[in-house]
Image: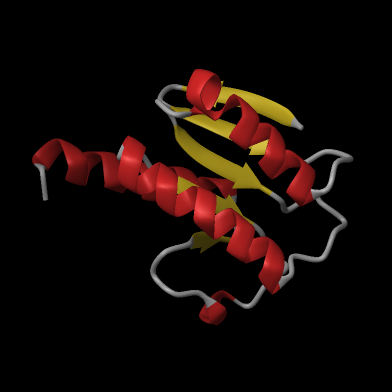
Length: 113
């Protein structure tokens, strides 16, 4: 797992760990390292298949982060069908799109929309 900080956002890139292992690390360190940041979870370089079970695990963390911390949570992957998602999980194919969405979310929060 590699963590890159860019302004108010932390990008977490999956390395050789499984997605579930990375999620556990995020949960363990959430209060001290991640709660005050927008999060981008980049699974695009992972060789692991992104299954519905994995997405449900990610979704639980994402909903908690968006509701309690009032921050953005975006998944970057091209290995899934984007039409399969409801409104709770934000999934985009590129990091640039993730940063664009976070920027729009921050503007909306600043304007209290």
